[in-house]
Amino acid sequence: GQNIDQPTEMTATEGAIVQINCTYQTSGFNGLFWYQQHAGEAPTFLSYNVLDGLEEKGRFSSFLSRSKGYSYLLLKELQMKDSASYLCAVRGDTGFQKLVFGTGTRLLVSP
Amino acid sequence: DTEVTQTPKHLVMGMTNKKSLKCEQHMGHRAMYWYKQKAKKPPELMFVYSYEKLSINESVPSRFSPECPNSSLLNLHLHALQPEDSALYLCASSQDYTSGYEQYFGPGTRLTVT
Image 1 (cartoon, rainbow over the protein chains, first blue to last red):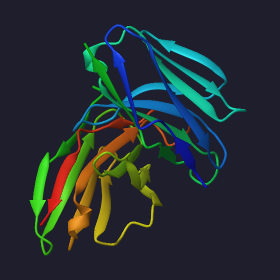
Image 2 (image 1 turned 90 degrees about the vertical axis):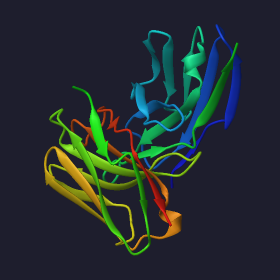
Image 3 (image 1 turned 180 degrees about the horizontal axis):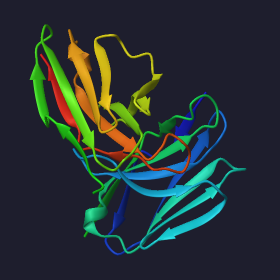
Image 4 (image 1 turned 60 degrees about the vertical axis):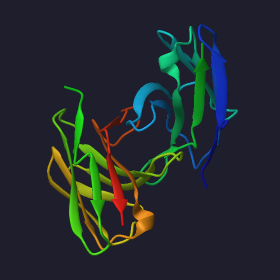
């Protein structure tokens, strides 16, 4: 089966750093994606990890540990516009390798 | 152009109506997807088309019928829907249906079934 867990909600202050965790148990593993989704809008791609380690993209970084079934998204220098849901999605390596989304973490950035 | 477009943005339909959702991309992507998203829930995969052929049907009821007329277009035909089918329907595309290629999502069609 597929199980992807994320915290439901997080709050942080503008300018701070926040880490959003994702743990997964899936039928095989062939990559992990992070997406951002503002309320009422489409998800937008943030990052992709398939090997262990840290991927950095500007204010956003994503980390993966395949042995631990664990990833995190790190957001630095938080801005009000970062208030959104953050979705962790895992791709299995069996069947047709579909993407399975976690329940998402709603992040609220306050002044 | 990294855009996936969807029409209409909003749709209200009765349980006896027949309607269609449309999706278009001009990025040369060969994989296209339909997802259903309920409020405060993650997207749930419905269908995957790869090279214009239906590759995945996630046990979706037959009142939802997908169609891929060509590599740029994806339709979702709706008939005899139920109120519980009200949701945001998202179309997505990716370069190929293999690992490493991110999916680009359209803005969605917000469907209300009355």
